[in-house]
Image (cartoon, rainbow over all chains, first blue to last red; front, side, top):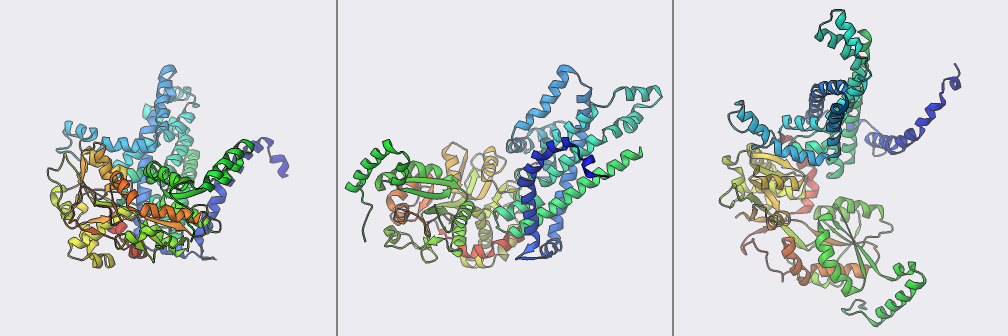
Length: 278
Length: 349
């Protein structure tokens, strides 16, 4: 059981990344954690108690989690079939889909948010489409609503769902499905019992990416829903940038961090159990 | 008192110029040490007019080099705190609320008429906290409206509350400096006076809640709000800043800024000298120039602002009889945190 036997020298290759993250991420994170519990020199949980005993804080936490979950679900709903198509496609078709997914990443979030502002407004294409289909009797405003925020945010984050799922799916042997088919499995059965369990690691990664980004997004809610919908991230930003209330800012930042890590780790553990069971 | 800064370069300065030219050939690094440098910290939005109008005039008149660092007010405050023992910025142009913080932390050098003579010619209420800072050019806040959507300009702040504008009104966040008057205007409409509505905002908050059905959004990013107005999705933004709205109008946007009958509000824009900073005489000279009628006259038009020097006429678009409300920023500083808390709860979707 000596440690030296287990330590693979190749692991040392991770050292630059570990050092980099420790300096630019780990240390500031510790400082933030420290600041959130060090209230005037003595460690105290009082800021957290004060924050969590305020009903409005729970509205903010609820806003943050609800939007993050909805964005993640929408991304999964759109992203999984796309990843499947991408994994099946060959040659030019595959390249085209890949470019279509990756190229928009080079367009800034602010530009996308402004574009959504045009699409979602009362005389925008969404409103016109719904009127044309006879689903809406008069122009409706989607701009600055939760629905608009979810739609806009999903647009920004969907590549981070597609790519991890795709990278797992492309490694799955397509003959597995064919084998199941020859054994009499229906397409639906094949999907839920073969393809889906095999792609779970990709889904977990995609969900973790999208959820943590959606829970902590700042610019998108700022531009797509505005000041009337506070999330933990917007509250943190305001505390530091405008109210100079570093205590509140570090408290909300830590609450957000804990919630996000809990959800991501929890969903990974859950999927492992589910994956192991099937 | 000696007066080192006459209008014309002195013999000494000319000699020095010659010495610098010689030194340039021998050791270029000496050049820096010889030229006086004045560092000004201000808002990023000030950069165009400072660098195009103020700096060339000032550099020529005082034979020095001016560096303008444009950022946000709070960032300037941080720079001053971090370099408190050895300041490098000599003058700061910041909003009054941030000036109050700077005074509290002992970062400013008081202005006096002896050091900045133009202070004597300012409108009443233009200097604050015993001359710690002075207002120079003040953008004003009125109601910006879409000329395509509205046939007549809004004549009163009360128009924003009319039911026919459901979902068409945009107001600034209370976290934005230009957002505070919405609270006071609501108080005025509920029957208060400028003094009473600033001290006790309860009636203002209650009145503001009745604006909620009309709200398209509450913005934190000003360009986005004006984008909505120009596209016709929003019909009115109030309070809206003259420096932004009238600049967009001048650029051809189908919008205008109205001065409602209850009066407009002056935006806080202060200028101060940093305590213990280098080049103090130059710093006071810079402040003095910005408080003078000559520069203010040249800048009031292009910046769509009100001059604080008595000799500067009111800008176009503001009638001579329009009341200009000044905001008690010390009171704002003391209460803003609580107001924002209540705002978040009561103005939420």
